[in-house]
Image (cartoon, rainbow, N blue to C red):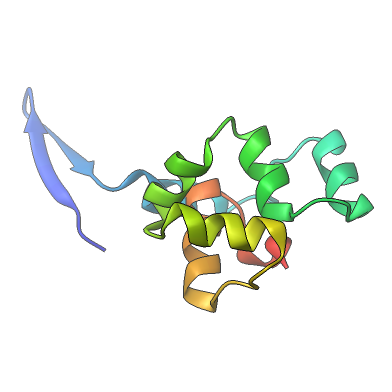
Length: 104
């Protein structure tokens, strides 16, 4: 992880990638997803990645960029054509601010 330390008006601040911040914030809670999203996940009719991405208001391009993967690869994961590598799924989970297990 690559962070920068900034001093603004004498106070230290850490600048980090958004997906790292979301991963840190998501690690202390139960993903913070509302009941309707959990119901959609339980129905298993759509990819968990797509459901949570839509809930977060993210486009495929934004999610792919934040996860460091290509948009076509994300599309293949969302449509079930590919499972997604563990590394990719961890990056997607971090970008979505959820634990990777919820995407399985």
